[in-house]
Image (tube, rainbow, N blue to C red; front, side, top):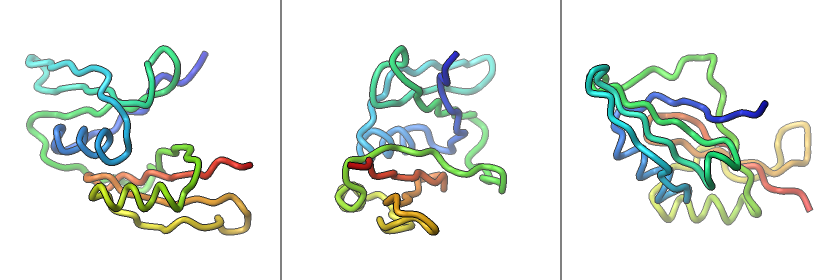
Length: 128
């Protein structure tokens, strides 16, 4: 068994795809409209779905926004240099909500950015 994807509901699909591809450097892997259900699924990731987990962005055509809720935490992405990643993300129009630095009660360097719908993305600097 392995994790295939994490699904996030998004208000504006093109805006969200632009964030994940242009700001975070993922690729749009596939997209499918479901007119009978009035929704679209788009999958984004850093590599093929056969090689790793991806994000499923679900756009319900009649819903403009969602409340994140207090049960969702974040999606985590490994980066070589969290400081440099924050600068690249900021330069591409992304929103850094916690600058790179050691995590509380530890030494792992992390940062947080926020996507257009308010989902938190944690950047975890690779050790070594």
